[in-house]
Length: 324
Image 1: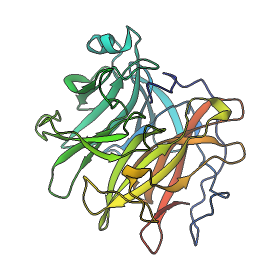
Image 2 (image 1 turned 120 degrees about the vertical axis):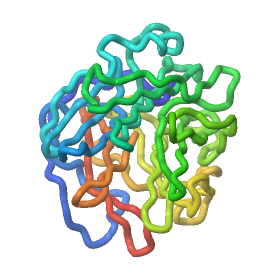
Image 3 (image 1 turned 135 degrees about the horizontal axis):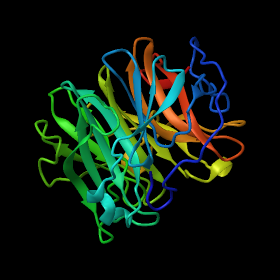
Image 4 (image 1 turned 180 degrees about the horizontal axis):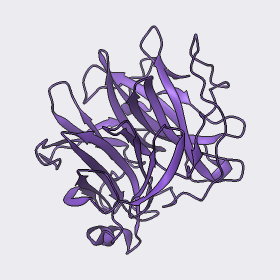
């Protein structure tokens, strides 16, 4: 959720009704991406992140008051599940000027616990912070505040929002984050606490101050894939958000696009962009499920409302991801 460009909370929305395509022979052209898959119920989300729970159901966290939650038994019908902090998050209020909207959560399930990284900021400022909470069930009101992970001040050249946790092949924990300013950053975490382990800040992607945000890193085969969102969110049907990707054999980079351009120099290979009545898809998350990887994201309708998008994600013969 870009503090300098984004609204804090998605609008109430209509229901999606497009069936998820499950087979495709080749990657689609940029003008013919598959439409979002079928979702019903309470699918008004912005900046979604999702996990599959041990019982086979799904939990979604997204931007909203006190970090909004939704659940689904089948990945199609979703319902409101309250918020992570129904009593509020006073530790974040100095970054939000008292607003209870918390942005762009990253949700994961590891070591028998749910881990929630989330952002606190205000529109137009990089006076921002990322916090951590954990829960044994993921249910509303069960989340324990674990502390501040990283913050940015107006004097900094980065923005501490849009967190994403990745654990590398050596078991090391990393948090990527960032929006506009000097781009996407990465810090090392202590796996025992989930909090920051040193003072080093690495740069992994950027567009010379241009619009890039919402990192998501996953390891598939020989590569770590860094998904980001380019261009502009939160303009309703005029939004130009699109999903880009690069890859690296190292979690810390360098990440490069299909054409070899470094992501630190503005490179990226497009995975999803708006078309027809699907506007500004982005702020993506990748979830491994029984039928393959999923790309979970938000997009805007013609009315300007935001809603949940889900598509299957596949990889071509050269190892580059595409939607199906």
